[in-house]
Image 1 (cartoon, rainbow, N blue to C red):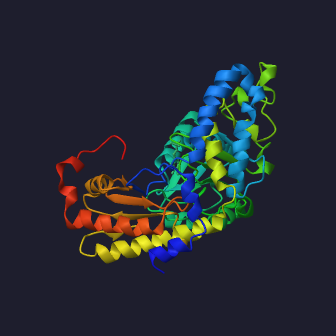
Image 2: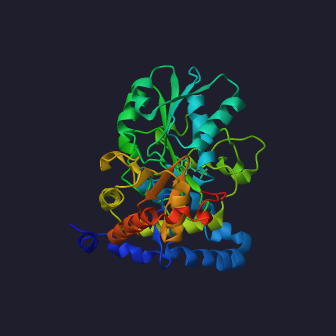
Image 3: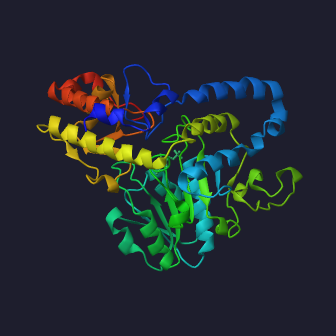
Length: 407
Ligand SMILES: *Cc1c(COP(=O)(O)O)cnc(C)c1O
């Protein structure tokens, strides 16, 4: 099928109208920051002017702001195969990693190794390094190549800490298999679903993952810096004392006790006062998913990736572009990356010509596919524009050489 036929048969085609799509932009960066759902602007403006402006402090009860982290958590739970009441939304992914990693380490006090891989997102590794030095109990962060994770699993390991989909190249770990192999030797597992939630079917219950975390601003479209989510397998909830023991995670925050006592449920992963404006934006953004079959999303995402690889390889054969993502769509998340000499400048030229992807050091140009708002026709157009940028050497323009702070 060509792109027009694929678009004609796309069960998700109607979803595009739920988003604000700027004129002349083919947006292949929803894996970094999702597009703005139309429902968000109205909701945020209502919460600001009516709820905050009108109700002031009463809003915590009258609009149940206090329950928002859990309500938004339940919407995300539905997308990752988690039962209601097992996901809460708060803080950033980086902070949520510390919460679950400290919990998991405390549940395996006799073991000292955190096993992760060199493809993990740096903040996850940095937070682990910081926690190790804060705890000062002789823990070790053991990093192996992604393909060597399975063979590095042994009974010295306390926690297996992985990101399911590699942020640079989209390589996908086998979450059920690795979780099961880890649990065979009593290892606790932490899965970062930053590039999975909203991009592909995730089932934390079936895979028996112990803990999971992920971002609100990528495929979930919650807006820049949207709060993140954290999942704790229900049978673990009472198995640890939260290390970030803030009052919002207390069993009775408004008893103002002098001693910390964690809440029994997923609330114990809360720390401080919830960011109601940001949570409201994410809450409204998640309504888009209500009638979406994640299987349709995955099918479209794989087809889009395959189509883009085919078009780029056919059009740009004369240039030294190398596919860096798995060619097999089942082994990929929802993005495709190429190694590309002068990749930074090439990406800047692409952006100037209406194709927004991003660049990851040292030489990776990365394109994310977000089936809720992209058309197959755009995938072909993006490849055409890449062909023009390379063929006409548009990237050589000095404007495109200067690095911005955020790439
Ligand atoms: C995007 C991303 C993060 C970002 O964490 P923040 O705390 O939101 O900045 C963390 N982990 C992974 C795997 C990511 O892809």
